[in-house]
Length: 392
Length: 173
Ligand SMILES: Cc1cc2nc3c(=O)[nH]c(=O)nc-3n(C[C@H](O)[C@H](O)[C@H](O)COP(=O)(O)O)c2cc1C
Ligand code: SF4
Ligand code: FES
Image (cartoon, rainbow over all chains, first blue to last red; front, side, top):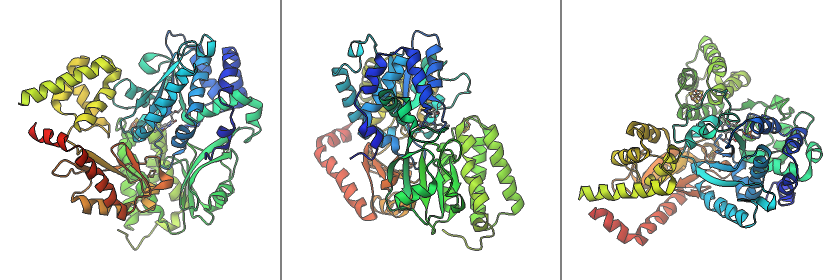
């Protein structure tokens, strides 16, 4: 049983059939109207992105589904691919019609190779049903999708690193601009969208922008999937309307009494109980990829931080100094704090370093990796300073 | 004898290039296939791939070194990757790690002498609600306990039994 009501209730291929009968500008208009923003973390408006790619002049264009889901604590795309792969492919096909792309690629992270067979089988069935391939449902639109498996690198979730990997290079992010919508895979305009973004786009095409806007807030429309793990009774994937409060989510998942909640994965922010009444929406606490990690009262926030900083030190591609060196410095700082040997002035220096990383790093990894550190230092200062014990 | 092994490998790679396409964007898929068949991508394989795609071997080597699932040095037939990220950590990954080390007699980053098992850490694998999670090659195991470690290893070892002949060939080569 799927936990994702909106996807389960979608009429199969309603969105695709409708889009095939619409003009390209009308499809993009519908996306703009819905207010749907990218669900991969950055929250870029979907209609806008499709429009850029549609206006780019090129013989070849690509629709790339970003299924590299690697943000710690995030697993909703895995569930979507397992239970609603058709909806994702439908969304890709709608995007293809909107921007005139003929080729689609789903970039599946290496750790999700177990899903490959299911995805290939779904694609094969769609070809038989004339939902993919030449002349889709007699509309004159040609489009097909292939599966590309990643090789184990978190940074390949960043869209330009992902393209580097597809092209056979090290997954090192490029400078942006140019953006993939102009210069993407092999230099051709490419739309890179998250798994959930594409599935939700298909639902919107099926039921209309107005329906989508009945969910969420004025600035953050629709529903969003949340991956919830950590110290709670019922971890798993949940669907909530945007604007939901942290407290509401905790109640639903049996995580009341939490000491802190990390919103948006390791790159996100650590929220203390005094802010549980805030809502998760683009105008308040950014959703990131929609992950919530719940920390119970027994957790040591420095353990948590050390785990996160280890992660970033390991996954930094090493291209730019603020990120390569900064993450290691922050990790060392966490270790000093744990040993009870960090002076207040050094802690301030570390915070300044974190702020520099946010500004000076080349890509989102280095720009967001200090978030957790900075928010824990802000909200849990009392807990982390002057330790007289050190734990193994 | 070494020559024939090399020739066989070169032939295999040429077939792969034929199948996957003679262009740079086939590089990662080609490397993945070689990794899968040979549990490593050795310098000779890198050289052949570079020749076939008309790029410098250093380019191939630099790609191999970048990705966690591509290895220059030999890996075991079964690569066990235990998630070390936060949710699995809170769910007891440390004890699972200890038991894996005990049962295999190696530490993380090592391969058993018989080249059957490699033990590695990995970062979040998207199974955070069911941790501790581990991956044996492409296969997932969730809610792993120290007690279950033995079962998982036995399951791998039984696979060796099924492929007894293949193992004999490997010894001869
Ligand atoms: C370090 C890093 C990792 C990322 N990982 C992912 C990911 O796993 N999945 C994803 O969809 N987007 C990820 N993104 C965001 C992508 O760069 C890109 O914005 C997104 O795929 C666009 O799709 P959307 O607009 O539908 O969200 C990541 C970004 C950064 C900087
Ligand atoms: S910020 Fe980090 S991951 Fe991004 S390009 Fe710089 S070193 Fe690489
Ligand atoms: S934290 Fe282990 S699978 Fe996500």
